[in-house]
Image (cartoon, rainbow, N blue to C red; front, side, top):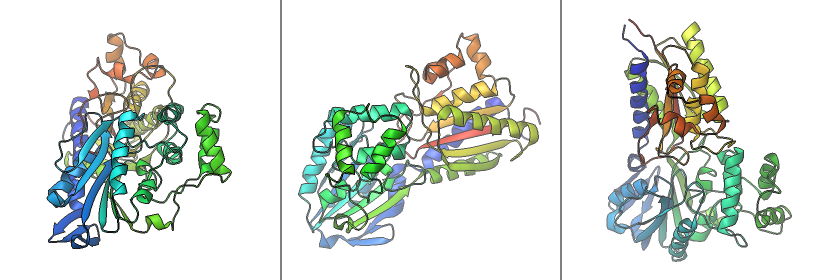
Length: 449
């Protein structure tokens, strides 16, 4: 019988995570769905005769959009007439036919506004003989700020910060973003009409709803102004958001402002939307890698959400159950979960959801033998940090206390980064070139043969 102790599992957790990230490499995902033979461009199950188009324009937004653009340039080369996309700072690639603008995430900035303006200028040139290819990936909503009439970037920044701090999930956040923007919620497709639009999406959203990925710039919007007011009411933000934001949403509810494009809108009649990568692919790859390493595996879900520290308690409970009753699977065990949790900001520390999960879990698992809890963001950046996440085990608390670190104090202050950094337990990957939400691993092993 092979030995699966903590040192082995910690190293193998990183191998499993790396396999998950590799499976959703943005360039690879695009190449799987896009190919060219003569003048015939295949995108998924649809064909486009490029001989019928005078121009091909590329626009995009998201952390992995430059990698998607690189793959598209390999396929189309000089057929691309021009393009522009927004990505996060330090995520750009030197593309030949597509300009890349770096800008702020998760809070939008002026560079993002300028980048969107460049895209809009391109879209204004589009006509019936134009093919517009839109490359969308995680982070794309914050990275493409286009304040609606009467709003300022500051209004959007303050609203985004309030929603992030209160623990609103990505669906709720993007519903409001769409109603404060000119391009989100089908607005980009409306701006490009009457051109043909192909949107390739790398999904970082639970369940892959297209209208939520990057706030659905090419997709009919299912949310309404009333949806937005209900979200603000849920988090007691109605009186906290900027006055101009509240006034716009209230005017929309009253029917004084046209809502975002809904199903059947003519502006969306010439659009193909296609998901080329998702969290499910990453989790499946993690599952196969864990099996290859000798673990009994269980895919818990690809739809994990909720507050990070509470989800961590569930993960810890699963680890304890496996260790004591060998249920729902026997050791050596690797339970794999995907999704995206949230953090309710209570303190002033530094961290992110994939660091807060192992920190909270470490408290629950203190003193337990041969258990490991790993959580990482597939984009390589967790919150406003340079870490993808962190790893913890049953001895993490003891090691931290020996260094004078209080896990509870750091958790209360949302300061997981400065807890794990001295322990050398942060997961540092750098920008991965993809973004399909998070992957968490709950591992239980045996120390002896």
